[in-house]
Image 1 (cartoon, rainbow, N blue to C red):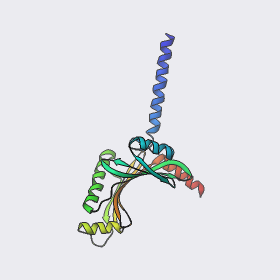
Image 2 (cartoon, rainbow, N blue to C red):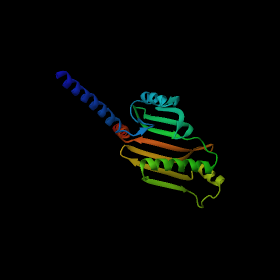
Image 3 (cartoon, helix red, strand yellow):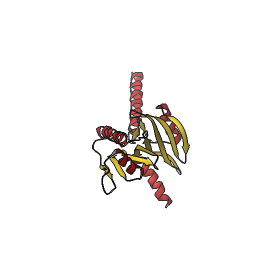
Length: 197
């Protein structure tokens, strides 16, 4: 009888410890099912196990490449604060688009998927900051390249925030950007920054 009771209590202890581990990981926002937490090296290893290739690391940001949300060859940036090796932000750069139709399609497609998963966005801005609305594809792409396109959608969750935007790199490259900000680690990093002031 003692053996049965001991085995029973041991089994309960093991199950409880697993449940606590899962509860701890669910406090953080996740990216591809991996909690946005831990050191940069730990997170990069987890992303490599998820099929991403590590391109390099510079100044607290690891760059990876891989498939995400049915898009091939996305660039994923995993960011930490230099003074504190704690992952708090993940950014996905989707493949470049040469036309407004493909760029806006990517934006609205990802927005629809995010809304299905996280509910209605907390903020949406979708406009061109110009006197008259550009009408054709080339005019819209021109405005994107010269920073006159303000297209972004923000989702607030209990675990952090997500921002989807149309973005560009100088006048050469236009793309959709998706960023995940973990609430717990962002707060830790913010407190560290305030301590430096």
